[in-house]
Structure formats: structure tokens, C-alpha cells
Image (tube, rainbow, N blue to C red; front, side):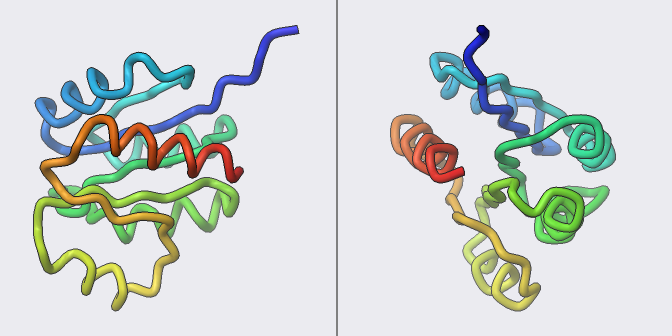
Length: 124
């Protein structure tokens, strides 16, 4: 029987950031999907179980807190993590009222990022 591989979705409007995240997480035993478009994330969560979404906060189509609020509606068990390079993001997240597991600052530390995501996936 095949071992279950957690599905992690990464979204950022910057393709360089997505490539960096993929490189940082490539040794992890997870299935990783990447996109620059919130609509694609919403398609994925309606088509299959998604264990964790790591979302940029500031994106042109939709901000991360709005996206994760919709993710929560469709898939309450999905872990939600915001990645942001802006210091005011913690306040924005707090004011939005959306429940997220972690707020990770850009630039991130690769080892720490992998550890945080692994811990969140283990808690699922």
C-alpha cells in the first residue's frame, strides 16, 4: 500500500519566491503544488484534500488572508500559513479574524520553514 504523502500548496505572485520555496522544500516527503493564482488554489481544494496552504499576503488578485478564509470555508482541516515581507501583516491577519497556524516572515530560513511546516503537518 502506498504511503500517504501530505499535499502542500504554495502560492505567491512572484515566480522567484515560488522557485525558492520549492528548492527549500524539495527534500521533504510531501507532494507540492505551486501557483501564482488564488483561483487555482481554490480549484485544488475543491478537487482533493489539501493538508497545508502557504500563501503570500500581498498579491494582485487577492490577498492571502482573504484566500485563506475561503480555504477554511471549503476545507476546515487545511493548515493555513501566511508568508509576508511586510511588518504590518500580523496586524492585518489579526484584524481579518481569519485563523492561521503561522505567520512566517520573508526572507525565511529554509531549515526553519521546513521544520514549521513538518510540525503543522504532523498535527493534522
